[in-house]
Image 1 (tube, rainbow, N blue to C red):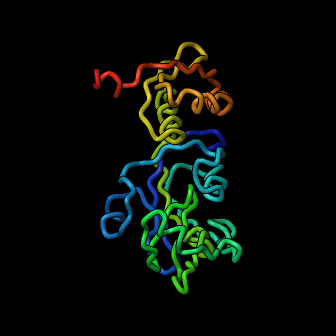
Image 2 (spheres, rainbow, N blue to C red):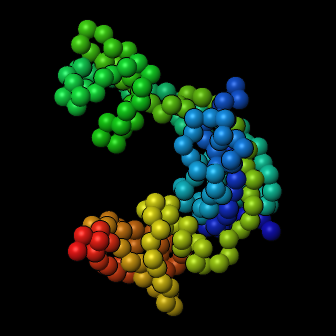
Image 3 (tube, rainbow, N blue to C red):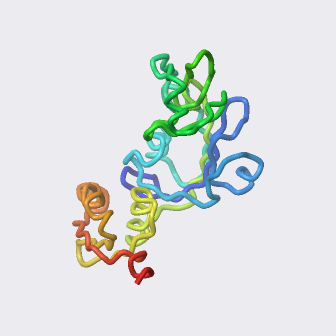
Length: 216
C-alpha cells in the first residue's frame, strides 16, 4: 500500500554528510559512536505536514513501506550558507553573561544557535548558519509501518509539538487535552493543527500543577 499525505508513519533513520559523518540518527548502533544526544527510538510523524525534512516527506509520498537511501543537495536539505548570518559581536555581550567565547563552541543566542568562529580585538565572530548548511547529505530511511490507531497518532503529534507526555481523552470528534496553567494558552494556538491533521476539535482542560501539589 502506497504512502499518502497525512499518513502517520514510523521510521528509523540515519543522516550522514557525503564524507560519511553521522549528524542525526535514531538508531542505537549508529548513535553510540557519535556525540549525538538524540534518543534511540523510532520516530512517528505525519507525512506532508513539515514534521520532518520536507524533501524526505515529498520523496516518501507515493512509496511503499520499506528501506530507502536519499541523497539531497544543500538547497533540498538545510539550505545554502548565507554570509549575512556570519556576524560580529562585541565581546562584552559574552562577558555580561559570564561566558568565555572559545572558537568552535556553540551557544544559544535567544533561540538562535551560533558557533564561535574567531575571537579577536574585543570582537567575536559568530556563525548563525545551520551547521549542515551548504552540505550535501544522505538519509537512510526505513519505514517500519503505517500508524492506524488514532490514540497513537494523537500521542505522536503531542510529543512532536510539545515534547511532553500529556494526558488526553478522545470523545467522538473531540480531543480533550489536559495541561497545566502555564501551557494552556500556548497549546490552544494549535487547535487548527489538530483539526487539520487529525480531524479532531481540541479542548484544552487546565489541571493543577504537579509541583504545587508536592510543595503543599
